[in-house]
Image (cartoon, rainbow, N blue to C red; front, side):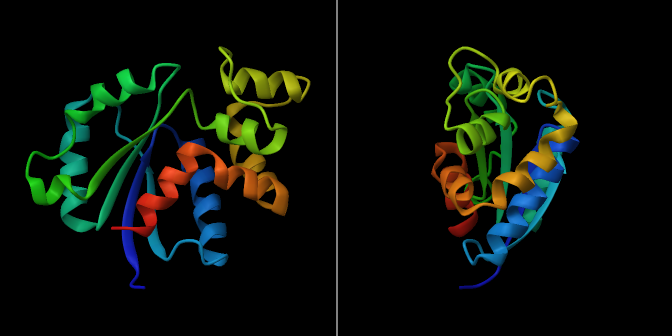
Length: 171
């Protein structure tokens, strides 16, 4: 299997760090074989985003825009599709992957076996951790999730994580 070169855009710097931790672990387990550059997106619904994605599609085999759906994932996805390149060769390299709410739903699923039910996953994590959880703790919770086989396996079963891994395995 050849080394895939991918770029993943996330909505914020805490997500960037958490994804780097995740991808490093997945590489060490042989689940993915890719060099992945993770960066925060330069602002969703921003003209610069279109230019950055297009340039990335020229440089990388796969470009992924990982976005929060805030409870309306299809609507969020439709808003971002305008930023994908128009040229078929470049567009084939790009993908939008949308969380139902936010990346914290992965951790809620893996650590507590819960799905968001009308509550933002970050708010539910805050409740479950007696107020400890804040966005800055996302990388630390990702490390905790990846440290146990049971929670790692549950994380890998989350639909959005499955879609992300699939996109990083098949250019």
